[in-house]
Length: 66
Image (cartoon, rainbow, N blue to C red; front, side, top):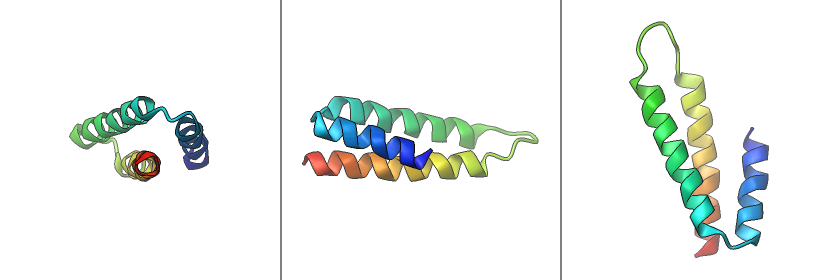
């Protein structure tokens, strides 16, 4: 999925759509919070890591816009 999110971020950067990137960022942060709050038998470590990796890509795209 990281290559997919990288392509999406690149498209938003080319379109100079900071708002869309910030919405992606907020969405990933909410997902991470929800996954961390899960209890029970579900191991959320893998999806948390994936969302954190995607968050890094999104934040890099925001930085590219300045």
